Image (cartoon, rainbow, N blue to C red; front, side):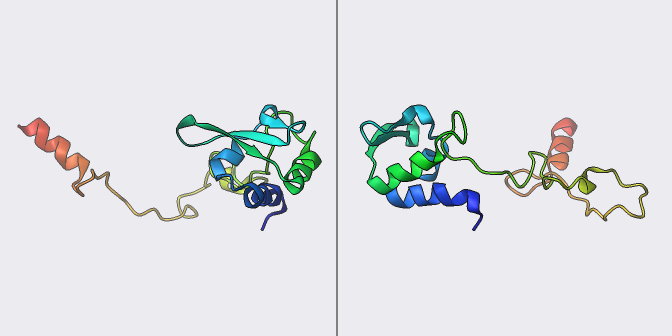
Length: 125
């Protein structure tokens, strides 16, 4: 397991929080004085969770790593799907012979019919 996932996973095991609650946890929702966190879960409902000593220590060690989000990680892929630090897949192919073969596909609607065929039928009517 990646080391940057460990604090979030440990917090989940210690508190029973759901993934979305952990990912959305911000420092403004952590109350060290009262030993509790307020998380926002399903359908925007908030709930307050008491912190055990172990969960509190985990959060205390993470203070100062990031200004807003409690749990952070290093992204492996960019939004475009490329691996970080790997610019090779961002370069265009220099010739068609080196480009990977792409299997032609047609757009289909939910019933498995070609959308092009459907649009042709509608314009022919």
